Image: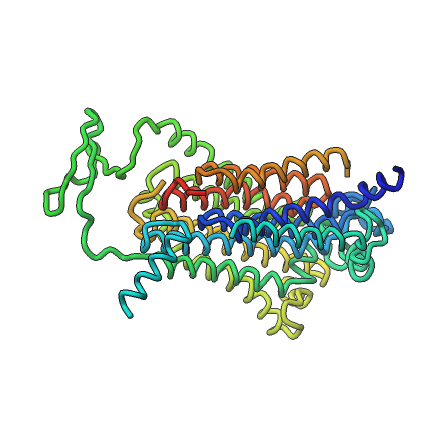
Length: 133
Length: 276
Length: 81
């Protein structure tokens, strides 16, 4: 029982990340609507960012802004690891850029096919090909 | 298809949970991510760059090359939305709606009819216009200058507090989007036209790359800001701090312009006549 | 880094993530996505990543939700699943 509690306390954050990855991946694969797929893509991206942030935490440390002044020695155990934060800032900005382009593509598909459901778009495309060929 | 997808996802999640048994504990002090180079950043960033906010120092100075290309990615996304969606209308729309302000009567003018000019009595409205939005217009008009001032504070104070170029640029872009939602899209397009926002976005990336090229011209490596101490007449440590501020300003200009540009193209599906 | 707060907000994040992809009305799905984004921002702030939380609050819960609502405005509002 003690071991189980220690195990859960040490790992539950990673399990939460895995569940969110599963939700995002399921939405991208199995949903028919294009906007739902785009929401699933964003859920996947933020789950990855959560994973990186959670490996940069340290128990008992403070935020990565140095609050002494000059002249004091700085112990690395007092501050959170800033390197994953930097990488994830880039990831968030890239995710909003990808979101803009994905929504532009969805609007174009709607203008052309008059629907956003994937199976209806596919059936329109196959009937177009069979009438052309 | 759905059950097959669900089975695949459950299998993948089970495999990932099995692999998390080997991860380092959450919050431990000797996890491998915190061992090698991040200790150097924590201990030396303040004396080498005079910037207490470690994330800004690492983002704009030690890893400045990544940030340059991230800004280029944002600019490319703006261009991609523009090329995908923009439609220049060559002929006028089939009908336009004008509203007489005092009586509230709406006129529908077909193509070829004589249109009343926009004046004190008639205003042009969208096809899905809802009246009684005076409160939103006036409230947004009061709040937007303070939001922009806060965005400028976030950009310039990014050395000492959480914030920096991206956050301030996104808030600045969001104020312009608020202006476009509270009023017409056309009135905002007259103030901040698409041409100005595209030029500002490119100027932001030019400021960032130009700072790096300036350091190259002064004899140091690309994006090595300590070479700026020859121009600004301070010591190399403060020159790095000022170089970080310059590139953050470039990033903020680029990001705010691209946010409003993508919004213009997305909300009107490229035609820039009606909006939310 | 308070683990009780972390656990509660993680549970709320998972619930809003499941809700955002299950709701049939696309406008409701985008607002739920905005709520998911804001709860993620709180989670990262509890873990000490203040810069990342600031960026997610302005980008995810601000601009990203507006883009979704603008795209739903220009396309259909109901979805079949």
